[in-house]
Length: 290
Image (tube, rainbow, N blue to C red; front, side, top):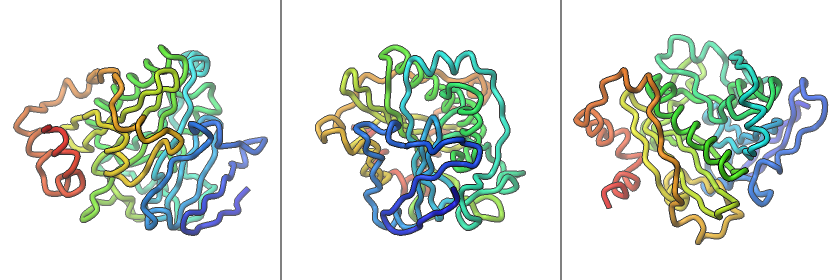
């Protein structure tokens, strides 16, 4: 299926030619409700793409996803652990040229191709291969992609394994005043990447937010604050009272790449206070000092 509808607030589910049957997105969302883009301007030129193990909302403005949603279960993670890894990135042919990134956009860019939904979450080779579509990829610094972000992904899988199921939504956050870009298609580089979780067992929620810098640092915030920052509500079916407190979140273990890099406190403070990040994340930074 290749038909797409690009309009404010309208999304269409499509499946790749490689998928034998139409794939539904509904199972990836808590309460069957997809993440809500609360900023009307962000909804313009978006389309939902359904995959076996996750769904994304692709945007013509970012040439990538505004969010990627997945339902993690203990059973699927057990299969994922036994699945050998592959790493063949490819442009998402379901999207028109005006909406999609190409492999050459990331070449010699100085950034890694960072997964929103990690391949390590997916049960089986075909599901895993779908995570390498560039519609699921954002530019990340090597230090974040190979370090703290690995720790976030591992922590979330551990929680899903412990409680049996978890709803996860991941996305980028951009500086509203200035955004660096990569490649001929000018793919925007996020100032942050975030991963929100809702645990239906404990009815708790929270979000990891990581700076996309050369000395990345991550913080845990409420889903309510995340929604205010990035203008996306990852779990609209969760009552407001379930999003204004942080559940007990698993700690992030630093990856070996991070430990090999110098990330002194002075450098960290400079990056958190840099104008680019400060403008995008002023309220988050203030919240960290409370």
